[in-house]
Length: 282
Picture 1 (cartoon, rainbow, N blue to C red):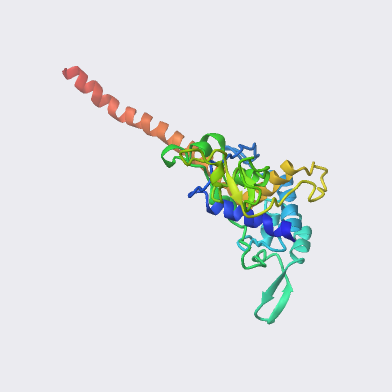
Picture 2 (cartoon, helix red, strand yellow):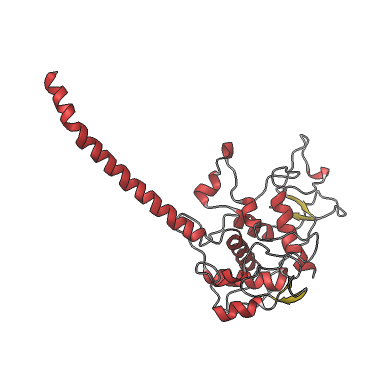
């Protein structure tokens, strides 16, 4: 139960507090997600593995209230067969005002909300860190490296380390190199008050340890793989139409490029006789 509570809460607190860093500068790793870049798309198998982690580790406490269950069968997502999607939906219950009672969920329903009042919903967590701002807030890292919310979540899952030797043994929390908004011991600051180590101390213990689930497709279930899979799934819940948006953007850019060329040639054709006329007068 603790692991189920920790996953969403750790991510949520981490996403919420980055702007007001109490600790050192965050270390965020640039993972090679398949959906990175202008032509990247989601990996269906990875999303299915991420769904498995959410279901087995997080769903007892954390909800996805903005995600419709039927979207699990959509192209570009986990793409569950219709019968599997319906069977998956039935494991949840939803309150039906007409029945004045709970009933099994159907594909038209959404994932349940969080079961605990202090457990944040995970639907849009990956959008909370949509990009890491470079100089002047231009999002340089995201533009050139594809770094965004998924990278932050995965790094947070992997970022639990033994605390530096300067930290008191009884200091509250758990040291995480990706989390910047937590507590930070004065013993780990230099004479100018600057943090000597990245990250800070987060209130949640590590939610994933590796081998938390058994993947049906035989993929390694080590900690690094699990962190990337759940981060990819949370990216999909936050932006399920990512692939379609990229395709539409490519078509739009292509259309504007062709239009620009046509306008240039048209302009040149219309003004060419007039330019020749004035050149003769000169």
